[in-house]
Length: 240
Length: 168
Image (tube, rainbow over all chains, first blue to last red):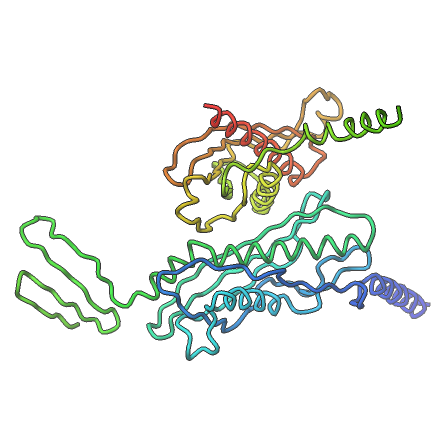
């Protein structure tokens, strides 16, 4: 009698799990969208234009299904991984201004991208809220220095009732958020400051003695741990 | 007679469109920053993000700005004098009371949000307007709906403040 009861319960669980699996949306050509930048985002002008190389794009969203952007109404899927879409968008924008290096060896700065969010986020329910968020580690391999910057893009699109319109609005929304995030990165003051500090060959900040009697000019290289001191015509060199 | 009717109909159809025509954009860029919050305001971290997104969306709808830029984006020097920055602080949030809203009504138990918003010119940080915004919605609605209402109100008040400033 007990074995019948166990078999009945386990059968019920199996049926329930099968019905849940049946609700899980699956990617098909009809519910898959192609997300890309409509046009490359023109980056800001740098005093000395560096060459960037996108070394890697790492997904840090913790999303088990990164290509599933909307679960309702049969689901909406991306045709590529978000990391690939983000990489293409950034490279396309940098290339348009001639700031993209062919390989890591010829690059002045390497960009390592950590993708925190790509797709839709929780909105009011009256519209679609698209969000793309990543942080970028800007590295100068020659100086072995790096700086982290953040970029975020948002977009809000109207909700829709028809499935075709939902797909169209979701696609436009994610593309808008992606463009916004790329613009936030390539036109951001954070990138300008990072490039400024990482591309600086030798700091030449003049320092004035607090007393005002002696004007001391100090400059040096952090790598060599070497400081050169000028007091009037006398030059002293300190090596650590 | 037919011709007169046709002309009259055309005029009637065209007149509201001409009257409702939006003013031309008078500022190059507007930058909305993420709103900060004073201690004790208990809102989810996602709320600030959503408010920021909605505010940018609503500012775009005012047609007062050529471009709504993201936080921390660089602006060319010639455009800086004709660009504005919007910063704000969430000073108070009351999550409301569903029972009071359902039983008493008349505004009792409403969810409310108070914000202080500053509009400044980008180039010289000149104050272009200080706005105190207060939004009330039913406690049955979620935080995001409140953010939407708040963003709509702020954008409307920013538009009014800048128009007043332009008039002198």
